[in-house]
Length: 200
Image 1 (cartoon, rainbow, N blue to C red):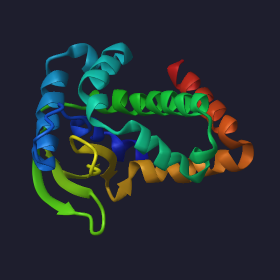
Image 2 (cartoon, rainbow, N blue to C red):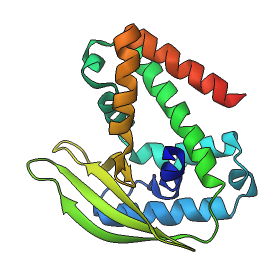
Image 3 (spheres, rainbow, N blue to C red):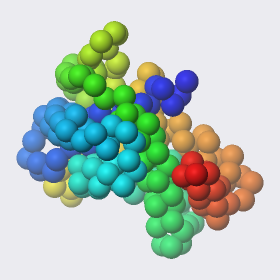
Image 4 (cartoon, rainbow, N blue to C red):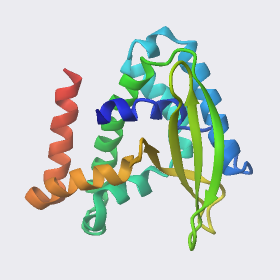
């Protein structure tokens, strides 16, 4: 069920780096860029991981604070992780999300995305952009949490909410179990094994 909920994330989980754009305009731009790229490429629609990786690296990663997202998913133990461990965690977390994108992109048909509301998060530099993926059937609601600290040149995505579930926060509860059992290295190994199994 959760996999089905997160499937639409790939439609709008990236945006081109337009530093001066408002967050709602950025999310809208993501939607157009990703939808057009998927609709134009049969290999992406078929779940080609190499093509999906290229799409994510081009459209997603420049506009996502992936370190912040991974740090949030790992929780307090991130502070005690070495630079090498942090790098491995980000690599395996990215691979995990790529598999989710692969499944999502096979479902892209004629959807469009509309921005419905932008809300500031009180007492922070964050905003939440609400949107809907519209196609046949009921629209799917998606919320994006973006942050722009005072020293940052642009807003970047740090989490996505699909069907009432914040993706990064959800992984935090899953990761906590592995961290309790085996610490940072245990989590890295668990993610690596999960990714290896999914690749078969």
